[in-house]
Length: 103
Image 1 (cartoon, one colour):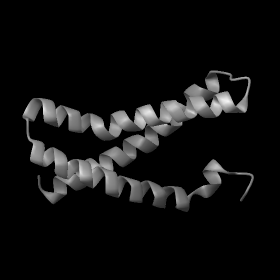
Image 2 (tube, one colour; image 1 turned 60 degrees about the vertical axis):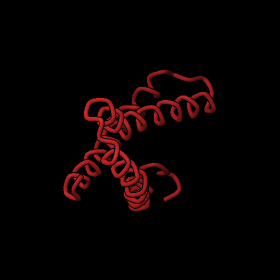
Image 3 (cartoon, helix red, strand yellow; image 1 turned 90 degrees about the vertical axis):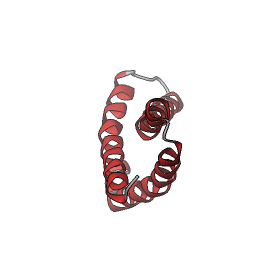
Image 4 (cartoon, rainbow, N blue to C red; image 1 turned 90 degrees about the horizontal axis):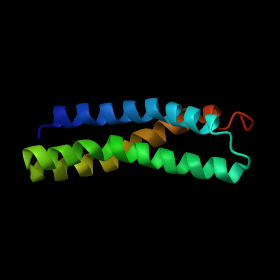
C-alpha cells in the first residue's frame, strides 16, 4: 500500500468522523435524557460505535475481500497513530465548540 493511498484513507476517516460526530450529537439530544449521566453515557456509546465503524470498517473489508493482510496492518497502524494526532489537533484548535462557557 503506497503512501498517497494511506493519506487518502486517513483524510477520509478524519472527515467522516467529524461529520458523523455532529449526527451522533443530534441523535443523542433527540433522545431527551432526564439526567446528564444518561446523556453522557449515550453519547459515549454512540460516538465510540460510530468511530469504530468508520475507522476500522475499511480494515475489515480489506481483510475479508482482498485477503491482503500486510496492507491491513500498515493501514491499521497508520490510522491509529495519525487519526489520533489529527483529531487532537482539531480539538485543540477549536475548544470553544465543545466548551462554549469556558472560553
